[in-house]
Length: 356
Image 1: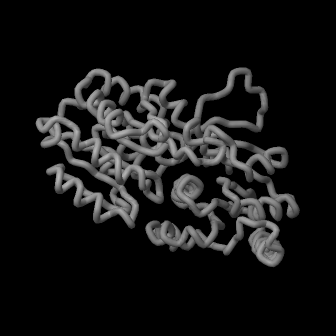
Image 2 (image 1 turned 180 degrees about the vertical axis):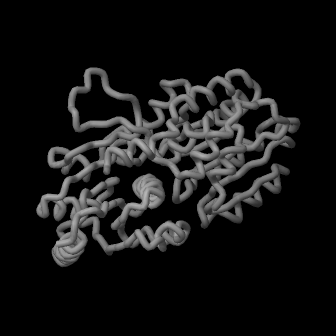
């Protein structure tokens, strides 16, 4: 086997797992490391959006059709055999997993081949794959929340979730100017959009006084199926907007937004605190182990956001929260500063050092 200098990165194909993995990939490429990147077929669109990274000669990408049902004998054992051959051939120095059910067969083979395993947990609540391999891991990195008091386990590290370098560069330009006449608001419902946002948020904004409405510019990342009706609602209510199912320039939009209305997946929240944005968070109520609400609670505890539970979300109470953010400039500025203080511009470097 070849000398083990490569790093294997494994991540499930949805935003919460793949985005921090891609941020690490970007950092390792800049350090001229060789990387084998594993994911599932759902990652196709995200790979296309980051093709400059995946086309780098130092990067080899493998994607698999991995079933959630591990009782699917032919799929599970067929993938195990493929993964065994790839890992044995490439002989990586370490396997870094960002979770998701996709990672389970990779971590199993990594253990069989005696490869050191590093687990990265982006959320407050540890996912199933990380729980299963916690005991077998060499290191465990928590990317959200504060360090637990009296933590003595030397294999546990607390490092903010990695974010894209574009976000880190914008962090250097952050100013807490809440007195701008134009009110930019970013609405983001996670990597798949959120249908409930598409209905209630335009209705809530329409309830605002006219003198405020005319100052608004709304960036709304909506679900594809609701795109036309969301845009028509804003136009009908004479609210200036840009609606997309995906914003390619999301970091720039986030940077110039006064505040953000969002779900509370760890990747989005990590970008929010890196740029020091106050937020109104509406956790997805069906998230596994209620991890979105737990993520949001940590921000609210640190006075960087307010939470509206999905069951209590109405156009009236959302309108009141939005109005309080717009009218109370000193409170908004303080929340923004609190948010900024939770971010860490050195998180990628710290993560890279721990891995290598």
